[in-house]
Image 1: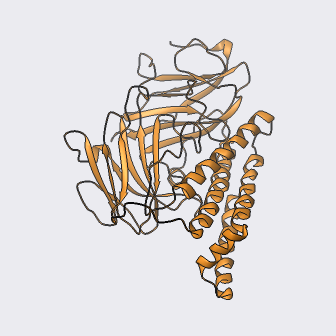
Image 2 (image 1 turned 180 degrees about the horizontal axis):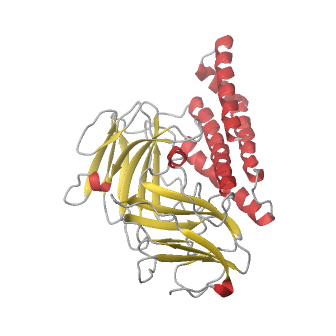
Image 3 (image 1 turned 90 degrees about the vertical axis):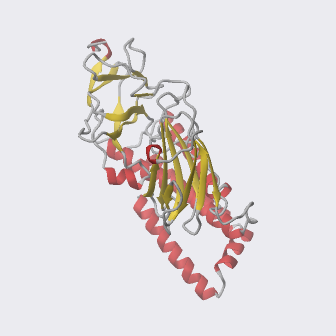
Length: 396
């Protein structure tokens, strides 16, 4: 379905270009006409309707509770898309903002992460400045493409904190350009569209995220006036982001249903194309439990920088980590005597360590991550079993 959507958009773009040629009008003239006539808004609304297909995608739960969450999910994606592609869309004057956070979620957003994104362009060079502070992990990534045009993201440049040169006070400067420049360099290419700052906490409540700001190096101090083209293209991209992202992750969730209550290795190429970190090994899946059942996950963690597990709703939104324990990581887990870990997903507190709260859900998606596995170590697939709540037992 997503493939058909983007095929349709390519055909539409082709005929739009042909229309420009036959009309004798320039592209800016067409954008102006579309904005003045209201066609830009009508097409935005029409494209948003396509996102509703994700709610009835094969395998999606059709009960009122999950459909209500699905509708809220689409409003969140719409809000995030409008902020990214309309409000903060100018790559000549980029703004770092949290696109995924406590109330805008997609693609199994990580509760241990603090995400910052900015729209950029390969036409410019940029400077990132900031201060490291105490967050456990800090990484900078440039991405090519986006969900709203190509249907996905692909990695471009990577710069992690252990490879950065910091000043004595923890401050830093990073140059984003096509050729190496400065103490810290992050690669940009012709089709680069985004810079992402990914910060990972061991303890979100005690660590301080890095301070980061971005500026265009062409010398401008304020953005140019808005244009009809910016609004027309921004609305179109925002609506296709909402439709494209929701349909892509609906397809993922449908695929996860083939291995319920298990955590098999997820394809790295697919993950990278969706903006995943190539240094993380992902285990995506689907879970479903009746009222008297629990999911027990057991594993001996490999030697790695960190790990975490999280529970999501069916739409691949992390459950509400502001109020409930829906995730666990290397620092927060309680371990068995042999160094292994046992995580229990259950509707009510079993009185055992490492309980993950289902928050009133009976099914959804889930994800286990190994971060930056050390040289010589290998990823390990967590073992899963469903058991009656009465039979929960084992080392505590």
